[in-house]
Image (spheres, rainbow, N blue to C red):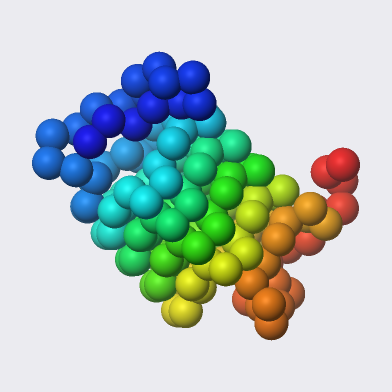
Length: 138
């Protein structure tokens, strides 16, 4: 599986796909991960701001401490994914992210930071999920 940025430049290449992949700490800003199967992947501290995860499968993936600002998760399956705090008590950053139409069943967002631009599926309550509102972002 080849991960490219918006201009087609290769950011990461993996034999055998990305299911269960170890991408801890990788820098993949603007990556195109649309429809990728990242089930069970370790994406701890991943820097993937402005990346596209549209329709991706992230079932059981660890995204703790990741920078996902302005990432697009439209229609992604985040069932049982962990977007909570990292081992240093740092937050997963989802300010400006689009989670409209995403499946969030069983996902953990405890301590994740969002802002007024973040879009959630209908009926999702970020405060009830333990998320932290970031009023400082514009």
